[in-house]
Structure formats: structure tokens, C-alpha cells
Amino acid sequence: MRLVLGIILLSSFITPVNAAFDSQEEISSWVTYYYLTPEPSKIPDAIEYMSQLGWLDDKNSIPPIFGFLAGGFTANPKQVSGWVDRLSSLKESHLGVVILGLWYSNLPDSQQRTYEFLDKHPSLKQEYSYLYRGSPTAIEEIPLEQGPWVLDVLWGNFSATGSKTPIIRIMSTLPWVDIKGDSNRLMIGGAAQWSLTSNAVQHQRILDFCETEVSAQPKDVADKLRQIIESAKEELKGEDDAG
Image 1: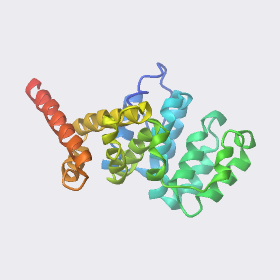
Image 2: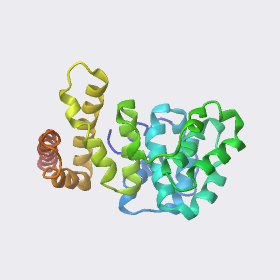
Image 3: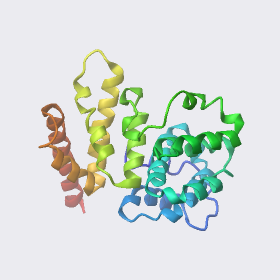
Image 4: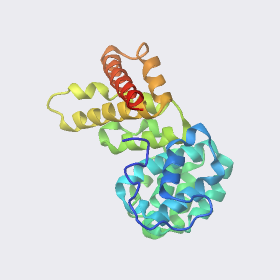
């Protein structure tokens, strides 16, 4: 997926009023390129606006958004309490991004904050009961085999942080493209290859990461990265020629 919210852009034809954002296009661009010019004070506004737009009704949009929010929480631990209090007023069906953002921010008090939040919204405890059977973990430690949604989480986290770490995690699945007899891994590897190529075209930082990791990654990953770099540069050249 192109970073990160293009899949849900224009998901609603009615744009609500928001003091921080004027349109769906503006907020989509703001999230996609947040890592270039972080504005943490606008993160609660962004989540509220996404809720108003109906983006949080789409389950496919939840992973990149909670990945983004987790990155925002991690980078701004002193703001978490105030942000969470404010976001508690979201529709209850939209609170999952807050719960999972807290959990996967992997701060020292993530577990306590998550459980306290669920105590205030007991109707959600059953849905998130699995959180009581484990401990918070970093986003990069979510098992990739769980599905392509994990890639969405990692892309959302990159959008918030600009970090190479989630990108290297995505790269690690590239050899799965050649796996035989495992449709799940094959699908995830294919999604990783496509999203890395697409985002290398859109984001110079992703292309730079791919180029620097060619010499650092195992051969089976490096070979796929060379293909991604070549494809991305060809597409960029085509765009330049067309322009």
C-alpha cells in the first residue's frame, strides 16, 4: 500500500469540520509524510478527524492507524495521558486504535494504561480479552505470519517515526515470495515486495533504505531489494519523462 491511508482516502463523501484539517486529502497527506515534519500536537486532532470521516469504521484501516498512533505515543510519552483522556470521547467502536496504539507503543506503563483504559470501557473487554494473556510488545515483534495486516501496522509506524526498523522488518519477508506450498507466506511476501516498490517511488527515504540494505541483508533479501530498486527507479524515470 502507498503510505498509509490512500486505501481509505475518499471513503466518505461528506467532510466534517475540523480546526486542524480542511479535507480528507490534507489529513491523508499529513499522515503519509508526518515523519518529515512531525507535529505531535495535531495527533489527537488527526485521530478525531479520522473518526468523524468514518475511516475507523473500516477494519482494513485500523492497522496502519494504530501503528501510526503507537509511534506517536512512543515518541511523546509525556503527552500520552492527555491524548488518551481526550480520545476516550471517540465512538466506542473506534477506540480500538487507542487500545492497540497504547499496547504496541511498548512504553514502561503500556500494560497499566491499556488495562485502565479498558476498565473505563468494560464493553470492550471481551473483544480485547487476549491482551490480558500477554504483555505489550514492540510493533516490530508482532509475528509476521499473522497476515498482511502486520505489514500495514509497520508502514503506519514508519509514517509516524521515519525509522528504518519497521522497514527492515518488512524486508525480511521478501524471500517468502519464492516459498512453495505456503499460500499465507507467499501472500505476505508479495504484499511486502509490492508495498516496498510502491513506497520507494513515493518516498526517497524508503528508496535510500533499500539501497543501503542491499549490502547489509542476506542474499535472498538483497536480491529482492535489487529488483525493487530497479523497478522503483524505472517508474520514477517514467514519471520524470512524462513530466
